[in-house]
Image (tube, rainbow, N blue to C red):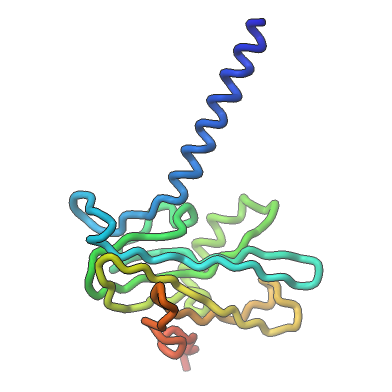
Length: 178
């Protein structure tokens, strides 16, 4: 009977920890200094996520945040959204992909993405209090196989909750250095 009670306690504690971890991942990253503010006093920026299917493989592509106004976003792979103060901001984003069972490569891939202008970009726009924005992306591939080995570059843009472009596709387009 004691073993069963301990097993139930362990199971309950594990479920509670998983629930808390899931909630934390959904909480926007506070990308501003000062005291916490109400959501209506801030703008929320979501990193888009989408599923891409190539032959037999299924990929989960995600836009992650590197920096806001030259200040690094801590644990960027754990945040789907950020909150910023109203006004003009430079938000650096990168294109991330699900590596399946190769989870140990994730930190290396983040560092790789940060320094690759073809799969990261700095987007500048004027955020309004109480508004939500989504960062969108289009990956461009060199081959008919649309996997990470043939990824050439990524174009980014920002839309508001109504779908209006705030940062145009042209402004977020990859422009190779000549």
